[in-house]
Image 1 (tube, rainbow, N blue to C red):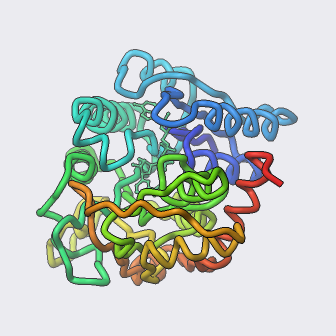
Image 2 (image 1 turned 180 degrees about the vertical axis):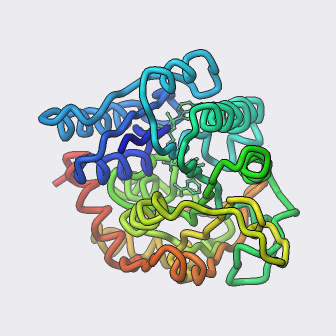
Length: 338
Ligand SMILES: NC(=O)c1ccc[n+]([C@@H]2O[C@H](COP(=O)([O-])OP(=O)(O)OC[C@H]3O[C@@H](n4cnc5c(N)ncnc54)[C@H](O)[C@@H]3O)[C@@H](O)[C@H]2O)c1
């Protein structure tokens, strides 16, 4: 079995590649290694993967941008791939307001290339990252996959909604099995420096004020990385099939070989409580600079994970208390703080 993982040097891609290599599965990794955040963190993740794979040569890495069709085509031609997992994307809500063109290129053109090549090379199952942000203005909490995702509030989420629509069209046109994951604020060791946990911990340790938007009243369904990886891993061989039954069409249901799952934790936590846990683990109070709600920010996310539990055996186990503790001990090691 050979699996292509795009975004393999990113946070989720790193953990997924690590898990597959540990299970002796062959991985072809693709990442453009961009400098959206500290490139050294991506290099360190990549070097860990290379070390882990060295004895049995199970990992081949290509540095390329998935929006470059020619280069991506070469990867598909050079490797007989069974599965594709597309995690490469420009993430982050705020930059999508400042530099939308990059989101169009990486997230939409890039995904178009993934779909075209997955079809051309008869990939058994294409899995890809969507986001909880696509629920936009919808407030029917906890949010089920079948809920409306029509009311987007920023371009990052628009690109992911577009990915879901594109995935559906390709699955219907070519009978290509596709599964999308709506991730809910994933956190944990080797996490992203642009996300709250890393930024808060870094600022507290360095005595810098943290910027707390909306008095920290945002609510998030924080999901620990190992739980998310378990969910993705369980879905690889759950290949969606055509379904000729009479169904109730909604944003996640279809007669095509097409599935969408929420991968959340199923627990609501305010950002200020999240911050308290970080302070507790660092044994130090944060200096706080209060700022108003940011443009494009979603006030609350909360996942209904019944479907993933039922169909994937998904069962998130790590609560924020334990997850933050794990992150802080990794962070101290990574930053060499004592
Ligand atoms: N982390 C979360 O909480 C979260 C939540 C919802 C959705 N997601 C989605 O999950 C996926 C992975 O997220 P992450 O947190 O690991 O982000 P990340 O930024 O750490 O990882 C993405 C990786 O993809 C690479 N990349 C970006 N555009 C590329 C391109 N065009 N070609 C090749 N490589 C490219 C980057 O260099 C990076 O290493 C993304 O699609 C993201 O939108 C993440």
